[in-house]
Image 1: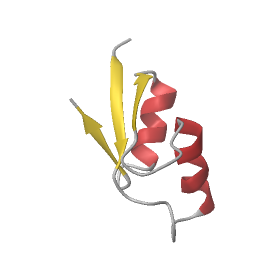
Image 2: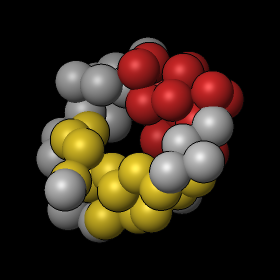
Image 3: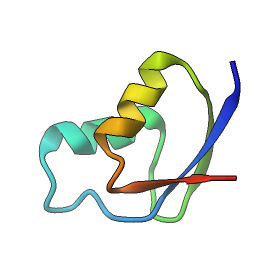
Image 4: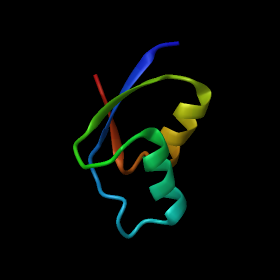
Length: 58
């Protein structure tokens, strides 16, 4: 599988609890943090769930 770099660009504040938990499950602890994950279907689904809070980094 390919690696995917994800950057949190918006806060989880004022968003539903399940979206906050998804950010934590991806490994985000603070804003503008970049995390590299394996591009598995599970991870891609988590990214899709919080797509408005994160960006894919090249």
